[in-house]
Length: 160
Image 1 (tube, helix red, strand yellow):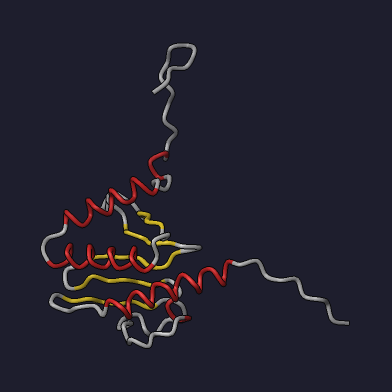
Image 2 (cartoon, one colour):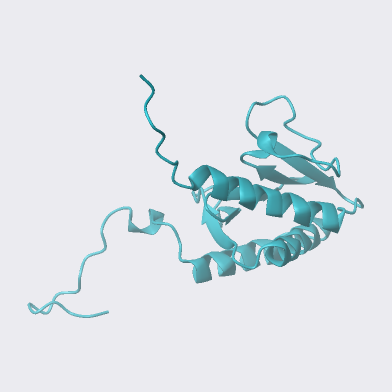
């Protein structure tokens, strides 16, 4: 920490810990989150993470929604917008695709949040095995959808 010319330590701004973590610290938080889970849930989240990184080596890891009741936050994978989140509950590891309703799902992986207009989720229960190739294709489709929706819109000619 550098000292100000008056010899006082710089003050930390209130709420500074609420800033988004850097990619490196987010990856460490996700590592810690996986280690903190017991058994199958940690193993499942670690495998899902590996598949996501394999599907898109340029994906960014983040931890969002950090709060006292969830100090490690929620693992989030983004590329031109959020692709999916990964949460562990007692009975399931839930992967929520923020724009899942716009994605084709030929592998039939979406099995939760099917009634909404935007999101879709995959709930993985203990002992279930995710179809790796179908999941990676879904990640790639979500990234492609994000890239399309974030691309600048061409200016059209006005009609008279």
